[in-house]
Image 1 (cartoon, rainbow, N blue to C red):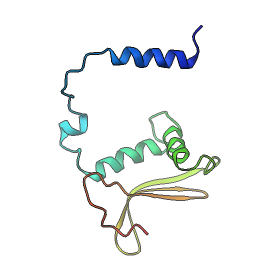
Image 2: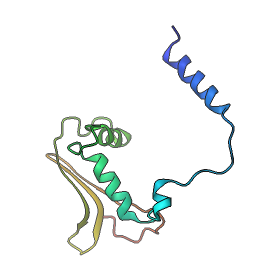
Image 3: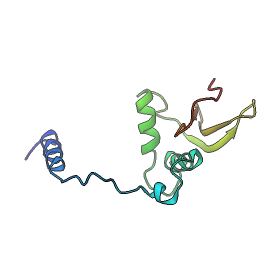
Image 4: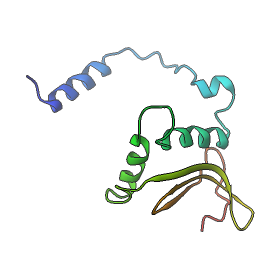
Length: 120
């Protein structure tokens, strides 16, 4: 039986043989005209980062996000809330706020915008 590495190499090799049309089909967000709106991305992220939602993926997205930052952070945290467009003390808004019993994570989506928010 081939190893996992051998199977992955074989899959990549097969994938590279697929003819490329040169034109990528539009994404669902592009079809709806919503691909440039930060709130749409925040809502999608909010849905998948909240382990209590109906997607059935549990904490997969949150764990992947946290492991990309630091593999030891939040291993045992309990998600309390995931909110979009959270108002700050300076009357700005944080695109996405993840609150656990031990940590708070703020995410700013800058899809096509310049960074002009006070990120501190």
